[in-house]
Image (cartoon, rainbow, N blue to C red; front, top):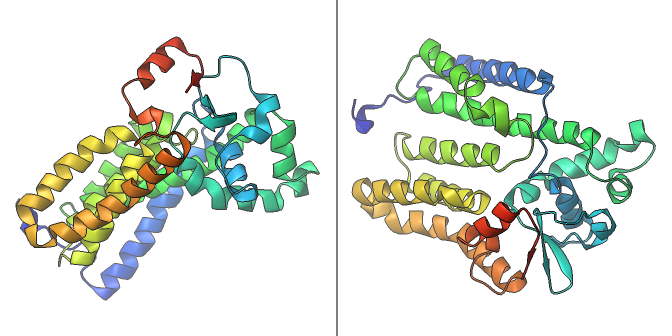
Length: 290
């Protein structure tokens, strides 16, 4: 079936209400399975909450206030100009800021201290891993819902639901993305949403602008998404040339912000994680000194 002949997912008002309810059912089912699964894998994402709190309280992305918690040979951090920075992209901690703020408001109701103080006094532990898993499950469940909407462009509800559940429970969405604040869950959410926007009918130029912005942000989330950026940009070039400039404008905004921040902090066009040299640090499993 050609892309142009894809049916709209929610054509009628009554059907739209039914489908919105079905989206909620899919989300709740997936989310509860994710949070009930006891496994947590907060490894690379160990310092995510700490960075988010630093963004919230210190208005910066360094980990200087947590220097006393650092272990030797921690490959997750970079030491530069007397500061400590996360080796991994900052997009996930940035998106996590509202969640960290919310947890901080209620944390003392159970643990008799606020989250900021707890982070300063405690090395990343299982308690923080469980809190991290909750938001990772939420992001992953939303990604599954968007995937359901995407495949609904071509499949009926039953087949789309079956495929969405296979995607949710038989892929790394369950084993990795929903277990901790890795890059994977947010990456999948950005890519599926961008693709869904591109295939909508009637197509809107501004929808392609936002699709481009999501793709640009997906690169900031995970540099290997450059492959998706390349092929989807090629699709826009071949099929929607009139909207190409608007799409490229949206695409360039997150990347320009990434480059600007990298120049300010690392004095390079891109952070070390986005460069081939990063594999040296990962293989040696030691911190990078720049």
